[in-house]
Amino acid sequence: MTTLFTIGAEYERERLERIEQNRAILAKLGLDSDNLRKLSLKKPKPVKKTYIVNNTPENNNGSSEGEQEKRRPSRLPKPSKTSRDSPHKIRYVEKSSSRTYRRMASRNHLGRRTYGGRIYDSEHGTTCHQCRQKTIEDKVQCTNVLQDGSLCKVMMDERCLVGRYGQTLQDARESGEWSCPKCRDVCNCSFCRKKKGLSATGILKHVALKAGYNSVMEYLGDA
Image (cartoon, rainbow, N blue to C red):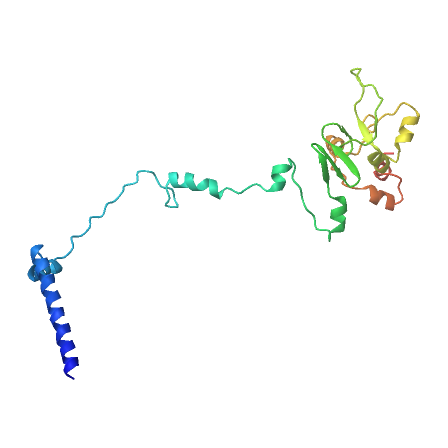
């Protein structure tokens, strides 16, 4: 019991000595207990807020034009691999729509496409007078000489010639002199009928054949 009391007294003595040493150090620095109390009671000075005035005009969204210019490149859509590699647009068609899939145009090169078994070419094709389609299909050209001495430039492909006038390319070429429906004043294309004050007939080939006529020309009574 005497030993524990001696140890406790020794510890307390050392603690008091350390406290006195710390007070002496603070007194040398001018930081005694009164000064420390005053410092702790002082309120910190408020920090002044600095505002930056932005003279850049803002748009309706509240962001400045400069900010928009910085952000705009990151928002631009990146071109797809297809659009970078190919100059043509590719349309993908669901195979479930088999009819559309079979007849859908497939572009081979600039200005040429195939559709419904026909080859359309805006650069090297020739225009059929009846349907006004520019294709590379075989056509027959009118051999009639016009009043100004020039050759008639009307051409027709076999589809329109057979369906509209009941004549094949071979029949038209056999005589060596083929006068087109326009020169014979029996043309039933929409442009020629409009000049006569008549409305366009639309697709009448199947109607005429179903009614027992050999062509649209016979069906319209122009034969």
